[in-house]
Structure formats: C-alpha cells, structure tokens
Length: 314
Image: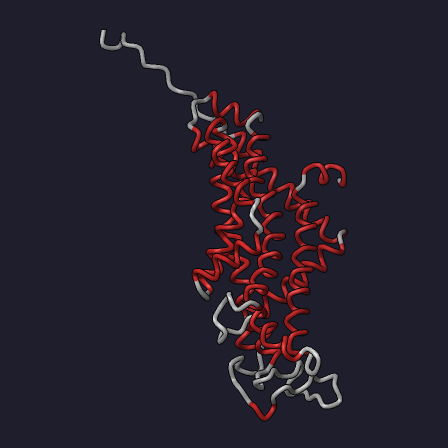
C-alpha cells in the first residue's frame, strides 16, 4: 500500500527551444553582419570614425603631446600648422591660455564618451525594465507607467536638462545621471512596443502554459529579443548625448571648467571666433565627426538587426 500513493503530476518544464532560437538568431545576425558590413560602405566608414575617437580617448596619455592643463602664455593663440605663422609644435594651435588644442581635444573625448556610454547604459537599463513591465502587465500598470512617460517626453528636453543641471551643479557624475534618467523614457517606450508585439508569440505563450512566472518570462524569453532594437537606439542616443553634453558645457553646466571637455573648449573659444576660429572650430569638428560616425554606425546596426531587411537582402 505504501507504493499505491500516486505521485502528484509535475509541472511541465519550459522547453529550451526558445533559448535555442535566440542563440540561432544571434548567430545568423552575426554572420549576416559580417557580410553586410563589407557591402555597406557607410557602416565601415562609421565604424572607423567611431573607433578613431575611442582609440584616442583610451590612449590619450600616450597620444597627446602635452598635458591638457599646461599653460604657456607666451604661445597664447598660436595658429594651427596650416597657417603661415603655425608650427608643428602645436598642430591645431593653442587657446587663449596657451594650452595645446590637440591634447585637450583628445582628453575631451574621454568626457564625451564617458557621458554617452554610461548615460545610455543607465537609460537603457531603466527603460528596459520599465517598458518590459508595462508592456507585459498591461491594464492599469501599463496606463499609469505610460502616462508618466508621456508627461516626461512632452517636456522640452534641453530646457528640462538645463534646469536639473543648474540645480545639481557641475559634476561628471551629475551629468551622467541627468542624461541617464531623463533619457530612459525613450528606451521604455521602445521596449514596451516590442513587448506588446512579442506577448502574442508562440514561445511566450508556451512559457505561460508551462507555468513560468512573469519575471522569468520577461527576463528569459522577452529580454534577449529586445537587445537588438535597444542597441540600435543606443547608438543614436549616444550621439545625441554628446551634443547635449557639449551644450551643457557651453553653458557652464557640465563638468568643471578645469576639466578638458569639448563643451568647455567651445565656451572658451566663443570670444575669439573672429580672430582665432580654431579654438572653437576644433572641438566643433570633433563633435561633428563623432556624431556622424555614430549615426552611420547606428544606421548600419538598424539594417543588420531588422529581420525584415535581413530577409530581403539575403
């Protein structure tokens, strides 16, 4: 009689087919990306432009010929090398305090990339969680979250950021947190839209029927498929954050004035646009170069990660 008791039925274990499909999808995308990169010249150009800035920022102590904070008033406002009075000692000239512009430009890339990378990382993480919960839960949860998001997105973004930066003060950490928090609604809206679409997919319905709880469904089955759209969005938002950080620096609301950044260089050079245009021109061209490279790279990533374009180009 001891063996007559029947064992209670076990809940069906979620199939691993969905995870295999995700891995297979990433492998197909990687193979397609390698082929498409060589066909899409703009993607190659964007990648090269972006990597030059990354390499300059990482190896700044070895590339920069001078300390970006060293002042030499005897060489103040020295023109770049292509001017008749220019010298190879200062390829891009010097600013009003005699500081080497090329060295400050390289070190300034560190600030811009740091703000863009960590700002997007915070925004994407927050937006992914908020958007996934709103899209999956639906109902009042979705309505409440989207009402708050729409309210934030209705505000003039630049004025909103300037107002917060003026209250918090000048600090690299403050700038990163400001951009990360205020930019998260954009990622949340994109994540929510993708989750609403994936809720009706077969692998999500299979997980629900297998008894998986909603946190596991979101993080194991839905989140891996959100990486592609969010990476594409992240490249464009990084480009925008570089512009906004330079704008805050120009207004004196970004990092302290003693820190070499492209925004601070623009602010210092605005007084000398007529007599010494290279002081503000160099950081302006650096911002344009970096943003253009990231936008080209973002366009390429969008084409690679869009399954409809991928099927049409095979």
